[in-house]
Length: 339
Ligand SMILES: Nc1ncnc2c1ncn2[C@@H]1O[C@H](COP(=O)(O)OP(=O)(O)OP(=O)(O)O)[C@@H](O)[C@H]1O
Ligand SMILES: [Mg+2]
Image (cartoon, rainbow, N blue to C red; front, side, top):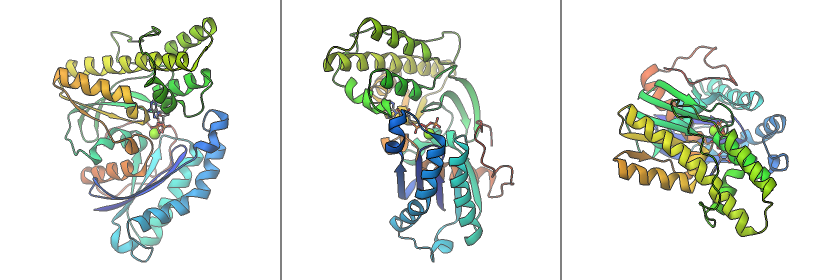
């Protein structure tokens, strides 16, 4: 089954042609980072405008990369999927309108996809694994620990009580005078630094599956007040120590949960799952504890339409191709729910 997928939940305009949930025929991602960098965060109105400018060229390129032209569309594409939420309302609307226009012109079914499920199943594109497994979504807006009992059947264990983990990286980067998005920049600098130079707090919240990252941030702020950055090496050491505190927290909670719920697989998704140390630490702990670790390739960690098409494929296998107008309505605060 060939699905044409569109993702516009935040600041990436993306489209993809994906076959049977795993065979990515094309993937185009147009990032708006340069627009939002000077504000150190995504400006919703600017994001919507950029999506409007980008959506048609991105769709055209995704089709031509998959060797499909608009005349072939009806013959070669079986369904159209799009991110229905959560996300920025104007941004979601642009993707939804484009998907609905294509579906109406070419008379194709529409499959709405929850963006969080995109991150959750992004590993499936390269490794078609089977539930049950433990999923850890670590993105710019979410930090969620979930037992996936079956496709579309979730037990949500916990989430962040304050900042999402990606947000914590981005805010830390701002404190350190680094640019946006801060996660990859801190990660790169951390590779050159000493992770044991500074002991930042580890917010384990024992007895709960929730996360909290505002304490690490405050601990960084207090450290910087007492110890202004004195050299590039000092900055790298701060980045390495901060990254270590976050990676150890994620690792600790995920391995506690996988043992507690008697599972043998951990699946990571979301932008922070491209973090070098997070990846190394999970792979190492997985080896030591005989737990299989699934990490998406970096291109599938951050927002992309291939993961949306992958979920659409899994979802239609279980739920079919008929969705009502409420299910197809862009919903900024959409939560994860069972199929
Ligand atoms: N190597 C990295 N190390 C740490 N953080 C990273 C890395 N690469 C990306 N990030 C962070 O990932 C986030 C972006 O990921 P993603 O695109 O999944 O989030 P989002 O779509 O904005 O949020 P959500 O999916 O929750 O709506 C940013 O906060 C960014 O700093
Ligand atoms: Mg995302």
